[in-house]
Length: 257
Image 1 (tube, rainbow, N blue to C red):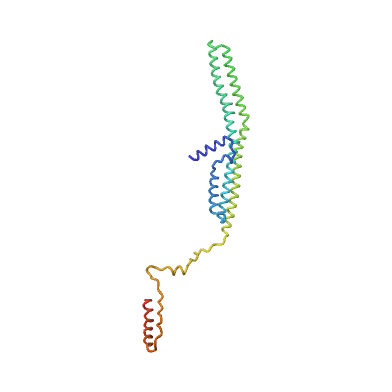
Image 2: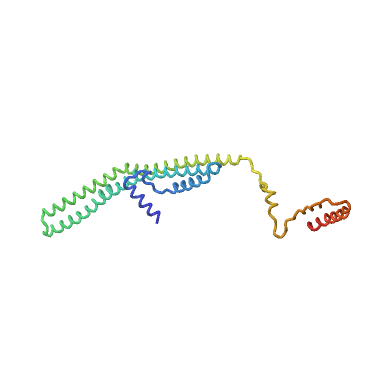
């Protein structure tokens, strides 16, 4: 999977002795920090919440740097010396000589039995004896050397504990600082004046509302003005007056009903 591939690349870089920045192992803390930083840029630092997200993202990025430093310290100052101790001081110096001593011991015992039967010369017996003594001496020297180096090996274990302890102390210091800053943003947000919970007034446009009519309700029309007739002789004036009065009375009723 992806994690296995990252782990393989990480191990190959570590074997080549890369630094924390060059190794670039995808720490979980760094992934969280990148997500927080990205979201903080979208939210913006104008709000207290945005500033708190920025603080937390920067804190996780610092945790990732401290974790990278821990990994390099463990690789260079513990894993490599430990592998050297097991491979050279123990497997080669102790196990290898023990295995060789066992083989020369069997050969020496066989030559002794054959010499008693007259089937082995003294030179062959002495040669087997010398080989056994040499392997015995080498095994003894390797064991003593390993025992004498116990203090150095224990120091490697102490160094490992020190690296991890230093990492947790730095991580705790970073988290305390981030927590303090976030608490300040929370207090600032709490001290803000409370917003009015009532909804804002609706925007109304008289022109817009009067210009829109419902299909089921026809827009009322203003009654048309009745033009005055032209002036005529005095004799016809009473009839015209009567006609004008009738027109004015009927027009509003026809238009508004």
